[in-house]
Length: 315
Ligand code: AHM
Ligand code: MG
Image (cartoon, rainbow, N blue to C red; front, top):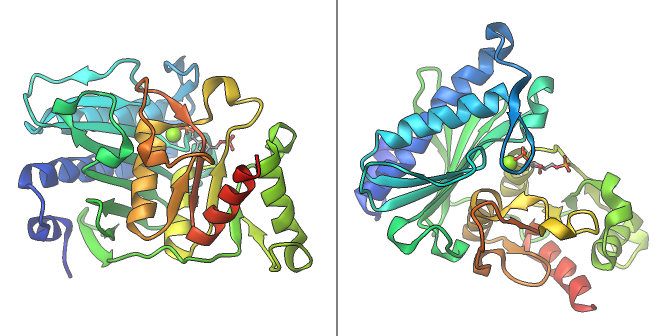
């Protein structure tokens, strides 16, 4: 059995970078502990404040953010933190070379129903500024707090999975993950159909038509409403996730955030052989204009992403 510390020591990356990943992994262990017993300790419901995006923060959003801050602040290699829960970037007193962008608790609307949520993070070179393309990411990962607590990591070349054991240690349970090239599963919030553009509508209609439609095969739909859970399924058994631009989200640029949701997930999916796009361009090549920038997100099995791109190319 290989644990995270042993695995990190073996990676061909700067040990300082590895230590940043270890800090996020340690924060995730603490978040997992809090989540497991939150209904007993009363750490549920709203925190009574909204974040910069105008969203009501849950008590656990705030607690998770505080735990990430605690662990990163202690790590001399980290100088900047961008968090979904913090309006501005935090500049630590450390002069470390790394910047972490994180959604400390993604999918928090699922907390009260005990459905998988997660912590997503991206590591960048702090000297290159706050706004960098996703292709500049040095590492990305997420923890998924589900029946098992999983940590999925990549330094850009391959994707590894760790599982949290009873003692609070991350044990390597899968390496070299590959996203199946083809799949019959798609994930999209179909309640938004009336806002969809022609490309999204065309793609989904073909899927719903199944073997009688242009796609020529039967599809199944899965939508957890937690990006971490939906992407984890895609990494494990293929499929496609879509939160495209629609007429309601157009003014904001999309629903999901580029720096700490779309970019790390796109890096993981691409490092596992999948694809990612906004519909028009690669997510990883988008130049952000703000730390909380939103973006359309389409990622997963290469063949499915290509089908969606073909719909967008029709104009
Ligand atoms: P959050 O960061 O505020 O939790 O929002 C992100 C979540 C994703 O996890 C999920 O894919 C999406 O928002 C769900 O959106 P919707 O409620 O429109 O289905
Ligand atoms: Mg989120």
